[in-house]
Length: 129
Image (cartoon, rainbow, N blue to C red; front, side, top):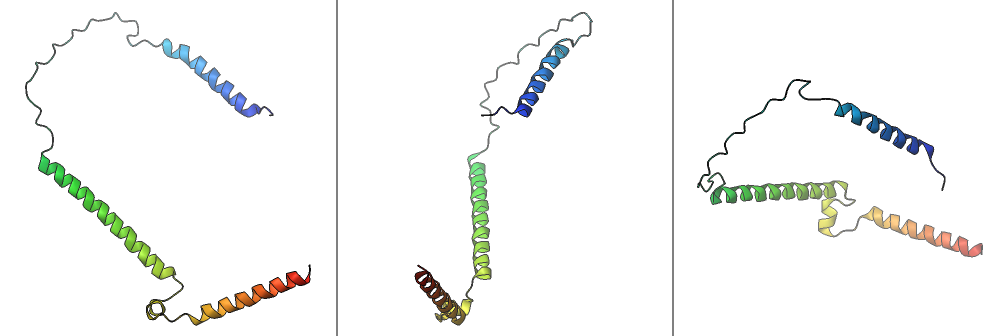
């Protein structure tokens, strides 16, 4: 397997750049030479016995889930409606022909021509054996 030089050079350049950046970042100090100050820690907040009534009530949860189901149903309805419209638009048969059961005349003739063409090709292949 031949070794490709460009990916190796790109990897070497990346490693070199990261190695050069590490000491530069270590030289930065947040105090810039000023003496460090001690910070007092704040007292922890008092413990509360409150049960945390910040959540949703049951009727609110039910309302949210119902809205989600209605939204999903609407999306499904739109997708199915669009699919039906597209099948009607790109169908080879019109609605009248499908409803009456009358076969389309041109498709029968096209099938007959295709069959005859296939038979002629098969006969030609047999002749050339």
